[in-house]
Image (cartoon, rainbow, N blue to C red; front, side, top):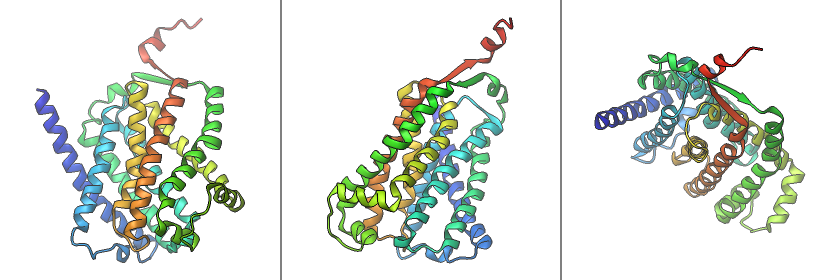
Length: 308
């Protein structure tokens, strides 16, 4: 019986991986129709295995999303909406606001950025509903009402401020310097020189340019995207940390596997190493630190409480 269940999950994963690739391409076309740009022509087709890389990327993303779905206690449209928020928030919104910040170096047309975001919203909507349906979660809606989630507001806000102002900027800038900035091609792209400046000098520049405060803003946004996902996960504290870490790392970094004319292969791989590791750590810390302030109570216990 367990073997049949595992085989079914493998077929669901394969089918959804192919559908994600189809939705992804359709989203690019629709985004390009809404915001005419060179988006379709921007993909680097010089590699004969570009389609295989795209399918591999979709398989990675599908796998981690399914892992989240199978360890969630909600069902139906609530689940589909949460999946949409997680994928779109991490893969499109968070990545593209950073593109806008660094666009002086990347030189990506603004219309192209809007096309990516709008097309991503379309493809993510289709995938979220399809994934919920394929996993049978529209046919088991009774389980959706089984848990009531409450949050300890004051302690949660204090922790969110600490994570946003201190922890995330620390992770972001240390990973950027110790991993990505060690590559000469990365330094050349963003600073115009291959010179290796000291970390403190770079941080002074980050404060002066406002990048540090921008990352505080991004840290808060990361948490706002992560909290709904964290609130519906099942499992231990460590397990939730692993799931959230994988979601942020895979969805936030896997696009760097795809060839594009904006970044050279060296820059992409440098950023892949940087973001995949730091994003996983960040997701794990969010879950580990905030999970204690999220209480899940079975509905039957809530209903049996005396009303006074």
